[in-house]
Length: 193
Image 1: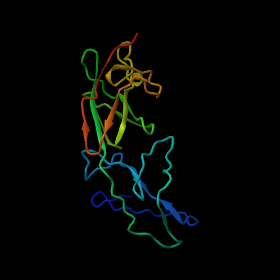
Image 2: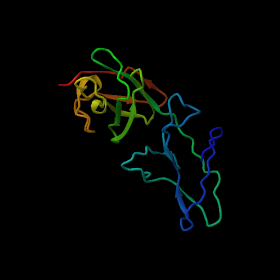
Image 3: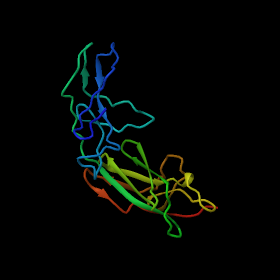
Image 4: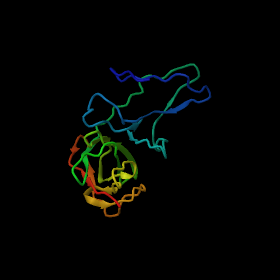
């Protein structure tokens, strides 16, 4: 459990046979501090970490914490770095906002995905992104949101996309830097047939 005021955390009920533990913190959804930018995830030893469902395990090279039977470890601290932000708005070809649309962002250097959804006004914000000079592909997944005959999925700047997870080869990437907000990564989705 984490204390919302101080950021202190405790873990109880650890396996008696286990003596070494890896401590990693996901910055996704974290608040406080540099919440405007979100927080990058990391493991003890300042090793960057972005948990994803497909590979939730921590990366190699992290420090472990040794806890003996009946003892505790204190002073195991992590200072999360601010992340970067990508934000924009999704509308249909008539200019109406598209709510609840999944926006898929993938760091092209690591292939680690993140999905956020648009709000009622069609806006989305992805915070806590790890810096990437290679950039993120940003694709708009209309397969879950249908109006009329349906909307077509696409990546930023109109690159066609089937919504199958792999970004279009022609997709323009968006570089991300720590503590920088990149806005205007928007789309106007067209109706399909």
